[in-house]
Amino acid sequence: MVLPPPLQFYSEQLPGVDCSELHGKLIVVEGPDAVGRTTQVAQLRQWLEQEGHAVLDTGMARSALAGKGIKEAKNGNTLGPVTMTLFYTTDFADQLQNQIIPALRAGFVVLTDRYIFSIMARAIARGEDRLWIEQVAGFGLVPHAVYYLRAEVKDLVSRVVLGRGAFDFWESGMDMRFGADMHQSFVRYQARLIRALDGMAKRYGFTVVDASQPADAIFEELKRHIKTLDLKSGAPAPAPRKARTRARSNGK
Image (cartoon, rainbow, N blue to C red; front, side, top):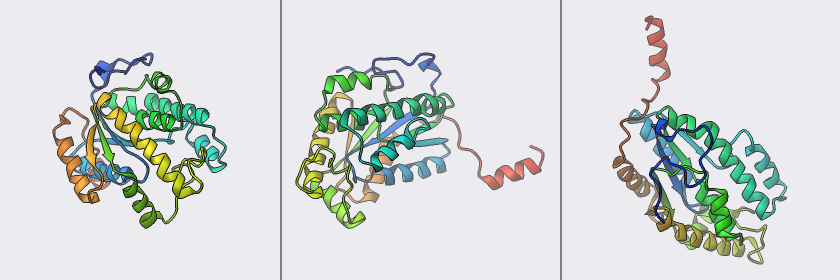
């Protein structure tokens, strides 16, 4: 598969979007559940802002249009697999049009905790057709970089047990009953999810990062990779609150 250049659409272009006007950088952190993506994105945002970059960080189920509905449906365990795929795709489309593209147009670095690849991987893990979901998600922008935090299932189990102390219904794929209990279902579902992401890694140009390392080592590796991207053309980070207050008081 030959990918289009970054900040071009994979296949279906959104109307009214001129990709030549998108001056920011789109960076994706992907990986299975409990692998530590959210922690890394938070640290990367802080580091990039300290380096002088304006940053937007986002992730799944955060759109104004669909985010609340997804959370309510998941609380009731009422989502079927196809409905869930389309719900998350709607959430992504809303964020892409109303948050990600405006931020890229303004020159921001956009950090996203998961992207269309997780939507696709979850669908594939639940037995949906790969070609169908790739077509559904074809309106996504090609990122500048996708960092795939890859871990084995045993590492994920350890992180859940030691970190949270309990398995999540949806992260365990219990809606599909992959196992007799939540632990067994988690192991089988996450193995399917990892296989799906592995299958996308070469096709979509992921940079694979060994997520069995300590969190600090993963962070340093991600920083090394990001430093190879040309981020200088982006928008500067806003001044700290106190500095902005002083500037206003000086009539600037």
